[in-house]
Length: 233
Image 1 (tube, rainbow, N blue to C red):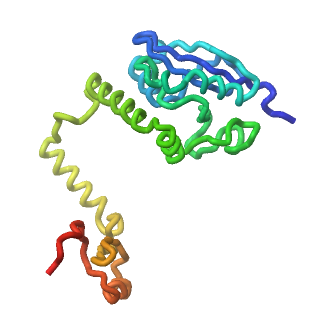
Image 2: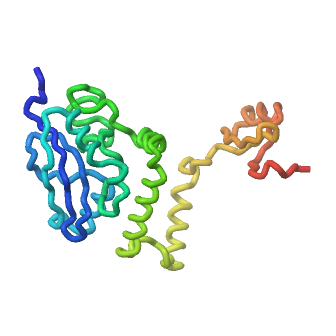
């Protein structure tokens, strides 16, 4: 039995009514007129900044299959569309990424890769970066994201630039960290650094006499080195 018989696959446009910037997305739903506006990073930040009531969603197309939906999104959100200053989109359309992918990378209707629940290529962060690099969009993605964040920091005074902790605050932070990073809580606890001139490599090992000695016996030295061009006397 096909559990998806009553689902629709929509391509929609969400518009910022204040600055007219738009976002084109796709969505699997039982109700095409639901209140879902999109899951794009830049769009989410814009909704938080301008408030949800200043955004309007329009249904552009309704399909019976995910393939038709993704193909239409890809047709609209191409490289030329991404280059526009009037869009919140940062990825070429048609590459998956349903809104119902959660933090465990499992969609809420079944396992990733199930033919009945969308595309097989629901990307993790690493795979998406690879996709962007191979598509020649990585630098454009970084620049667009950087410009957006700079604008946010400038308008909302969100960043720490130009601000300093008070001396009493610094002391409190120092005391708290000194306690939190004492003994077993310190990531360096029970370890030591060694390096190899031959391999030009630093390594952190458990600071146990027998382990350390086994490395010293084959030419490693205790400590850490960064400038391999300097020969120690």
